[in-house]
Image (cartoon, rainbow, N blue to C red; front, top):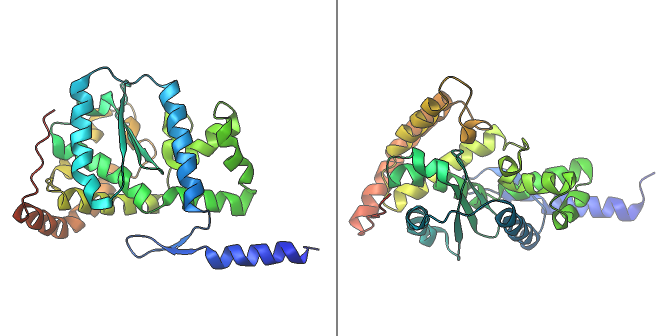
Amino acid sequence: MIKKPILTLLSALLVSACATSPTGRTQFSFMPDAQINQMGLQAFESLKKQKPITQNSRYQQFASCVAQAMIPLVGGQWEVVVFEDNSQNAFALPGNKIGVHTGLIDLVDNQDQLATVIGHEIGHVLAKHSNERMSQEFAVNQGMAAVQAIAAPQSALGQTAIGLLGAGAELGIILPYSRLHESEADVIGLDLMAKAGFDPQQSIQLWKKMSQASGGQGPAEFLSTHPAHGTRIEELQKRMPQALQYRQQAIAMGKQPRCAK
């Protein structure tokens, strides 16, 4: 028989679990944001110790310029780090941390295409997808052990915990966001880049390039746990009229990013 204190705790968790994402979707999230953010900070510090950081100042300036153009719209202080890695990937973690791979910078043609990916990753953070994943893990598998394992990032459980925050690919493990999370991050990211003055139409070109980058040998790294590029493009095209209006408003306000690759 389940003891009364446990039932009381579970009831309290269920009541506090109701949250709303930026798109108006009801979420199951009950982990304290402060704890999730602290986990993100610890995970990012761990990754910086494990992965080489680029010495190419031009790459770092390019990624930082693109990110900084969008950051005023979301608030807070964000750290942007470019990692020396040939895979076409980027990620963002709770606690306002952004990681970009040199392989992605090599792939994109311009600032707008990089803004597509960085905006998407910031979208995951804004929608608190990590909290949602952690809350689900806690509810299903008593995920507090995974939460505590952040302190031991080299362990299998520690890597899984970091992966739940959104950095699974960084550790060679597959912990994809759900299709729902990916689609939601696409919408948030598209609107965000447009409101910052970037050209949202370049998002379509970016995902086409991602598809071509596979070379017929499987999806590009960034696409390996993401929706099929055709589906993604269709969804972005549906949202494009609204995004273009946001960009027109941004330009009227003098927002015209100039980030040189």
